[in-house]
Length: 130
Ligand code: THU
Image 1 (cartoon, protein in one colour):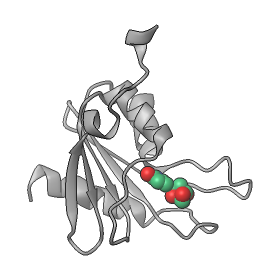
Image 2 (image 1 turned 120 degrees about the vertical axis):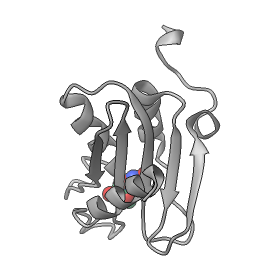
Image 3 (image 1 turned 90 degrees about the vertical axis):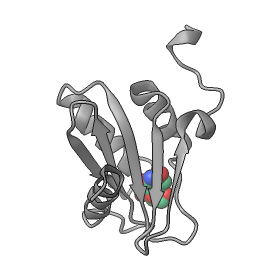
């Protein structure tokens, strides 16, 4: 399996753990660190709705909380025909910790696309603005 396929597979597996009883929209994400590890995450919803956490941020927080800092790619998997890009909040977090990495989006039927963060998030606010 290629590195890209491995990352998508990890995101698919993480999606199985999604806690999405309110939206029924199950998301899996997987993040590759430059040290070679893969950190995965799923969306975790809450009855208050607003406390819901996206799959991408779960993966990022897991990695960062384990001391990882450099990242080379992220993948997002859903079961939709139109592939799912990270939401605005996740784009901000991906930019903060990963910068201009490739973002792979895939569904369960083999459709996949890669887009660079600089194209997904063209005018970011970051530490260069402070
Ligand atoms: N969601 C994610 O986990 N990642 C995204 O990139 C888009 C949205 C989740 C949040 C919520 O649980 C559900 O999908 C519907 O918005």
